Length: 215
Image (tube, rainbow, N blue to C red; front, side):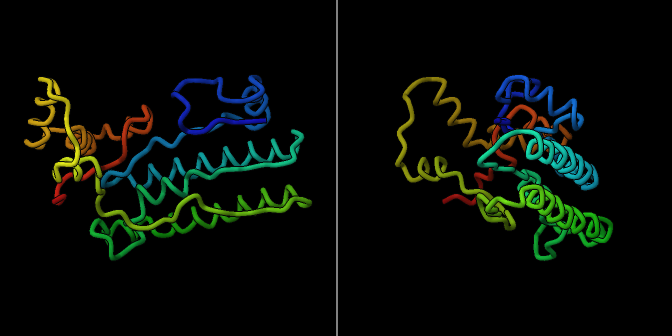
C-alpha cells in the first residue's frame, strides 16, 4: 500500500495505491489530512496550532488503521507537522529569535509544548502497533531558527558567474529584480495581506527568500 505526500496537487484523490485505498481509509478513520496550508502571521499562531493538531490526529488514526488492516513487511510513517512547526512557530519558544514576542509566547508556549508531547505520544502508538518490527525514528533534516535565506542563483548572478539569455523579457526581469520587484517581494506583500497560505495550497515557492544582504 502507498499513500502520496504533500506534493500531490490540491483536490486530487488519486494519490494512493491501490487506487481505492483512500476511500477505505476515510471510511474507517474519517477525512484524510494530506496538507498543512496555514502560515504564521501576527495573531495567527493559534490557527497554525489548530491545523497541526488536526493533521496529526487524522494521520494518527489513518496510520494505525493501515498497520492493523493491511499486510506489510516495511512501513514508513511521516509526521510533516514538525517541519511546519519549525518554519512557522519556532520563534514562539526561541527567546533569542528576532521575531520572538514575549506576550505571544506567554499565550502559546503551553500549546506549542503540548504539540511536541503529542507527537511523541503518536509515534509511541505507532511503534506499539508493530511490536515485532524493528523501529527507527529519524528526521530527514535538522530543525533550528531561520533568520534569512541565501539564494545561490542571486549570489552567482551578482558575482558574474551566471549568464542570462540576451532577450527583452530576461532583461526586463533583471531590471525589475534590481528595483526590488520580484516574486520574493510579492510574497512578502502577500504575507502582509493574508494570502500567504495560498503558497502551500498551490505549491508555490518557499516561505521567504531574502535577496538583500547578498554581496
